[in-house]
Amino acid sequence: MVIGGLQKMTLLDFPGRVACTVFLEGCNYRCPFCHNSGLLAGGGEPLMTAEALLEFLRKRRGMLDAVCVSGGEPTLNPDLPELLREIKALGYQVKLDTNGSRPEVLRRLAEEGLVDYVAMDVKNSPARYAQTTGCPGVRLEDVERSLRFLLGGGVDFELRTTVVRELHDEASIQDMGAWVQSLGGPNAVKRFFIQPYADRDSVLCKGLNRPEDEELARFQAALAPYAQQVEIRG
Image (cartoon, rainbow, N blue to C red; front, side, top):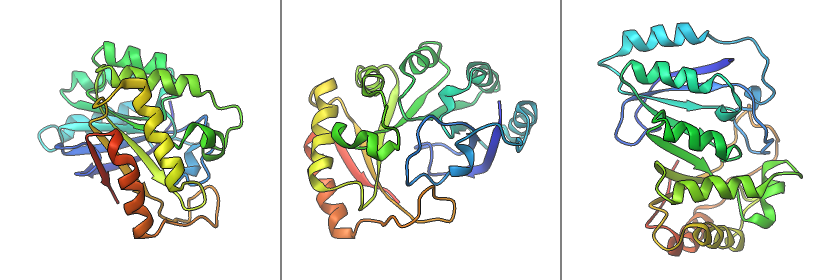
């Protein structure tokens, strides 16, 4: 397991919790707008060992009450379940960030009680998923299996979409919402967050742009029929 980053405290990543965020290396997508491009390939020098992370968490008990596990795509790591067991044994709640490409791993982690909250990225409408993930062979059926599991009440969750002017428009947002709703039925999505793209030096592809505020408002309105709560975050 390669731990590529650690944010020692966040009040934003896990709703209602004071958390830290751990970034694991390795991802099976190549989203052009990814901010964590340095984590994608995996195999780099670790920032810290798993034991060093656990020691940090032992010392932070009483100051932190949750750990967010992000990436990259954490579910690719075969050592993830054991790490989460160790974190849970210290009394922390766990939030998992995932792209939903490993539904069997997501289900096992939830059924074992190793995750308390999931944030799943829904990249775009089905027609534009390959373009948005940078993966021509992306398996939509796996994404759908993860969505069905979450929408069926497997674990508390939120859905989120990072929106980029070059990749998203009102029609694709509406198609995405209808697609997600078709997998779970009305009122199955409690929280859906629209996250405007923000340009950084670490972005995988240059030349992308944040949608204008009026575009974001239209995206929010287009998604509103398909979720109980739709908010623009960031």
